[in-house]
Image (cartoon, rainbow, N blue to C red; front, side):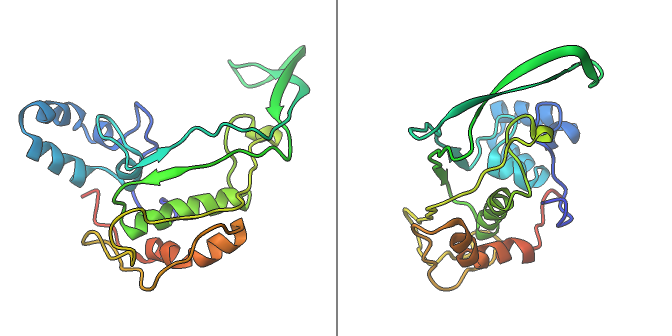
Length: 209
């Protein structure tokens, strides 16, 4: 999604993050020990929105996902043809039994964010909308039809600070008016959250430099 907007982003994996790709990982780690102001400048100027929101090497993310422990689920199994991990081809005559959470299983979902600008909130909500609309799958065995989920009874609350969602940095955009985003179906939530999603679509992000 960020790349579709033309933003430069990394995958966040150990060997594919902005600081490592820019050859700044060792300089950054050394700065953490000797010059915190320099470390902050390196982190802000040379990391993408994914690094800033979800975290990266020695940088704490601004989001927290609580464990989704279900009390309303059913496990099922499916026998499938085994696939070789070496070349991705079918292993002749070999079967594998996959255990999965069946259709209709429900899981709680709680996400906390800390001091995110409005466009970053909109970025996360757009990601959730694509998952809800089954444009993006989660988990393993996606090519075999797994990983589709939808959201229901969604709420978003500002726990502290200005409820009117003012701009938080030079790139940010103010979201005017209060957003009533409590106890909504997925469709209703994403419809009412459009001002935040538009903040991401319209923002001009100045980093990484």
